[in-house]
Image (tube, rainbow, N blue to C red; front, side, top):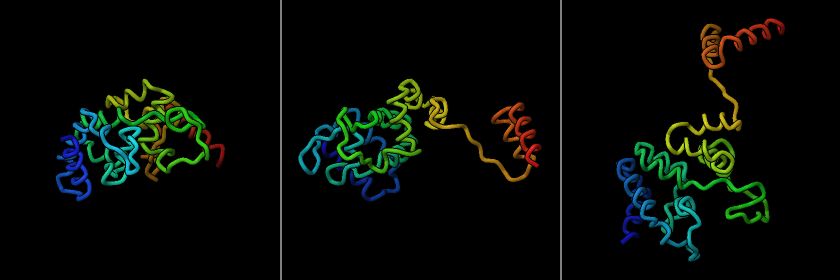
Length: 189
């Protein structure tokens, strides 16, 4: 029975078992592969709109686990991670909620914006599907894809000593940028 597998996944998540990262990905892969979540309903008896909806919905109808956390729990299973990332829906167009409907109150859930990897992947799926696929395939991180898409600017963390800061700047942005920065700093002093 498919619900037995879902119940096992719920129990592993609910108890926070020590073998969670070993056991959970196997359950999640089957739940997604066999589309078992589609057979479940919300507390109100409505079908789940997406795997993410099922994943984040409260126990005992869903898994009550934010999709970001689920991806983190399953990160050591490449196949499960790929399935999970494939199930993350694209971000709706501005002014719309899922399925092209207009949002009546323009309110977003807290996990639907910002710099979280899931939000970034949703935005990539909407605006740059080829980069989203590269993230799903493990070819790019969500951050690297967001930089390529122009959503983010490249950044670095530097140590406070001038030698290591200069080395980090040259490595990340090149010698010419380092010279321009040095000249700009000279003019400010």
